[in-house]
Image (cartoon, rainbow, N blue to C red; front, side, top):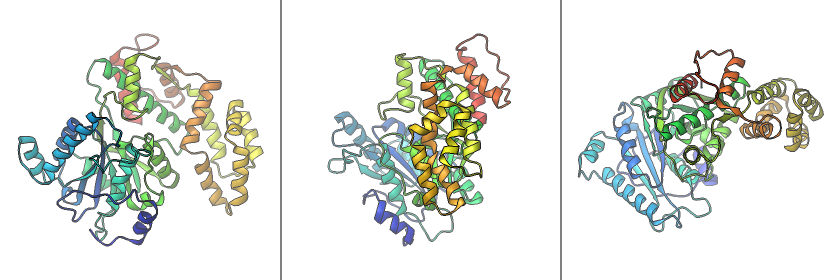
Length: 442
């Protein structure tokens, strides 16, 4: 560790999640910290550590793999017991207590492993904020105290979740891209395991198709927020982390809001040369996301094979071409343009207090350059999603998933050359072909 730069000290004074004790036997020479929030993930930790140990070792000596094992006081005894086992496992690795083949393998790999115990009695996360956002923030804020600021290499905050596995080139690819290309923020490519033919495979194919379709629609609309927002894919350097005031404490969707903050101020890149494989399991851990969508599919509580009407993205495309252009119009002129595109776009802007907000922006902002920046801050990733939902709820209901995909491909002049054998939901082989194609373009 080295003396903290002033911007880091200022951030920690204002925004730090608190002084957390870190358990590790070597914190020297750290340029990269991989933060892993963990709750009741004993078996998944083993799989993740296995994949870490098999990575290219070029940056092992300058990288720290930091597990934040967490729960609240009110968490079940089962969760606390699972976390206790995880703490014991990671402690055995840190202190090189070599008792079995797995521990021996991880210890001999020379991974630098560290642990924050936010689980044991007296260390639990506060009830109000306990969740993945706070756990991730604790790890990322703690990393700021660990970096070797005397090194010329970028100081990277890398997020991954305990229920993932990574490619062998994962760490080297990330570090190389950031340092050679001067990346400030990025997301890593992801792909769930879809090799099986069971109901969980069907559920995850359906959900990942939904995720990728939405990003593809935003790409078609030329939205600056056409990015995947999975917590296990996020990376940024210290400067960009501090610039956006760090990670939030949200119990869910912390990843969406963090990527959105980064995208408002930086060009968030996508690193396609390496891939993480998230778990396809059902889960209780957050109220929405992969686990909950898998749960919902398996419960057959609604038709999951539906997507937003591509016409929604056409409306968004037309709006962004006007709103994000170099021209600066009055609020009433923008509303008139919106009405010409679609009446529900105008209604949405009125609903979101656009008149008052835009007038306030133009009256209080001193330069045209600053107004252009404020456009992205106002019509952000959240308002983009809210618009698509508004159009769905008022005028453009969801349509069959594969009809929507075909229509969006046609709008974008894409030709996947996939032949469906029936109307409606195609068989699993065809579904996999669609998803494979989507992975190549999103």
